[in-house]
Image (cartoon, rainbow, N blue to C red):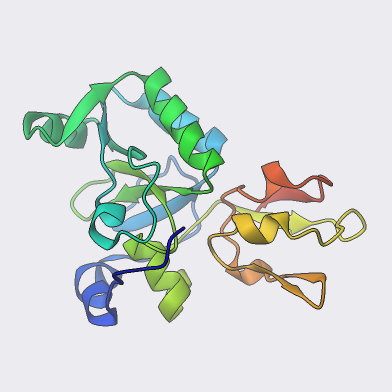
Length: 214
């Protein structure tokens, strides 16, 4: 990530995003209003398999803020929203295989997959690949402490302290800043974790697993 040249302001976030988002821990296929969900790859694949139309869009947040650039093609419109964006020439229709390939690429780059459901519908309309330096939602959470007002997740990371060697790999992968190294020792704050799985699959000691929230 490159140094930021722009940031979302608190006023901008509260006016356009935070006031419209509420969090609740529910399964990803439950009908909800005004919610976002943090996804792991298995949940994401199930969502895409159920979609009738998928459209690929350029990331609006990274285009606006510009704190990090690649990959830019990790935002997907689903069904009616996909059709609308295709008709507006804002997106191109892609296959589920192409969508999964794009999501795997953004996952490898360390981006969090978010599903968006907005007021007025009970269906997932967007799946986006988000970062804490550009994304309006993650930026609001990290900079201003809005995690509980914005996110929900089915899973949370569980740490095996006996296996962990405090190598710091998971610290670099965690977009939620739930992991830090203090005097060479890993500190994990589970209350800040939203179960995206970015840390789990790159842990060289296999010291991390995802468990359902209690």
